[in-house]
Every structure is written in C-alpha cells, then in structure tokens.
Length: 264
Image (cartoon, rainbow, N blue to C red; front, side, top):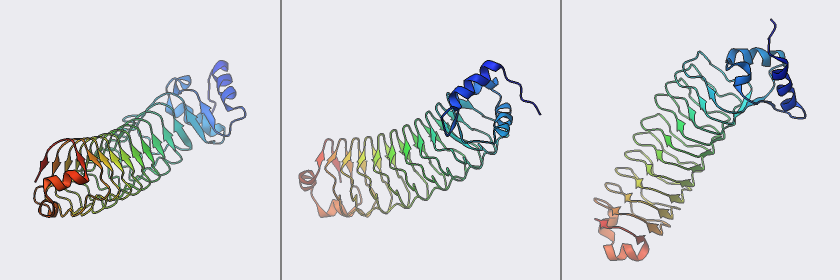
C-alpha cells in the first residue's frame, strides 16, 4: 500500500529525522490529523521510536496501543478509547486524559506537564511516573501505591482509595486529601502547599513532613506524633486524637508554628 504525502511534508520529516535516534514528527497535522495515516507511514519506516510535537487528540477512537511513541510535546487526550498500555511513552508536555479507558498501568511514563485525568479507570499502578505538573485526582480508584511519584505540582486527591503507601512522594503543591484511606505513613513527604486532610485514617505519625500551607485535619485518627512538622499555615484539627490528650494548645504551638487555630 502506498502512503501519499506531499514532497514538502516528507522533507520536513527527513529534516527532523536526520542525526536523531528518535524520529520526531513535528505535528500530526502534516498527516492531515489522520492517526491511521501516520501509523502506515511509521510501518514503512520499520516502526521506529518517535515523538510528536504539539497536541494529540484521540478521544473516542478505537486505539488500543501507542506503538513506539516516546513523547508528546503538547496534551494527549485518550478519553473513551480502548487503550490498555502506554507502551514506550515516557513524557507528555501538557495534560494527559485517560478517563473512561481500560488502562491499568502507566508503564514507562515518567512525567506529565499538566493535569493527569484517570477518572473511571481500573488504574492500580502509576508505574514509573515521577512528576505531575498539574492536578492528580484518583478519588475512589483502586490505587494502592504511588510507586516512583515524587512531585505533584497541583492538588492530589486520594480520597476513598485503598492507598497504603505514598512511595517516593516528597511534595504536593496544592491540597492533599487522604480522607478515609488506610494510610499509616506519609513516607518521604516533606511539604504540602495547600490543605492536608487525614481525617479518619490510621496515621500515627507525620514522619518527615515539615510544612503544610493550609489547614491540617487529623481528627478521628490515632496520631501520637507530629514528627518533623515545623509549620501549618491554617488551622490544626485534633478532635478525638491521642495528641489532644497528650499536649495543651500552648505546648503544640511551642513545637509547631501554627498560623490558625488549634481545635482540640
């Protein structure tokens, strides 16, 4: 089967390919936005590892695999597709939307520059993911571990998940909700830019956590130690906790710089 593209289109691709191990496709637009046409072209080239500049919109298509795609410079929209694996994909510059897909693992993906949408998926593992520049909402998903994730630039919502380990997570830029999860340790977490909600969790110590920008809710937990905590920008809620019986408000303020009220 012959793939017909213009001479100028072909020259643009050759220019990007020269002296590169990964074939760079400047944009899907040079294939008139036709994903299938791109796949036919790549097949003729021996299916090399390749990247795509700009955005990639595949919502509602019957796509099941990304082949040897290694990166997308813009956003990647895979909503309502049959995608099960991200294959060799390692980075997405903008948002990544996998809502209503059968994806179970993010595989080799290491970074997402914008929001990561995983609503209504059976996701159980974040694979090798290390960085999310925007928000990550996993409320009610069957996720048990964050694996290699170290930084979330926006908010992180793990409410009602069976999460047991935060893995390598060190920082959350926005609010962080662990409301009614079985989390027992915050692991390597050092900072939360917004609110931190640990209401009705089995947490006993805040471990390495040093700062919370908003409020800190530890109500109805067996918390006994604030660990390395130095500052909380908002209120601290300690209703029905061992800490509320162990220390007075004055003693807690001597340990932690609290910007708001301490509700015991």
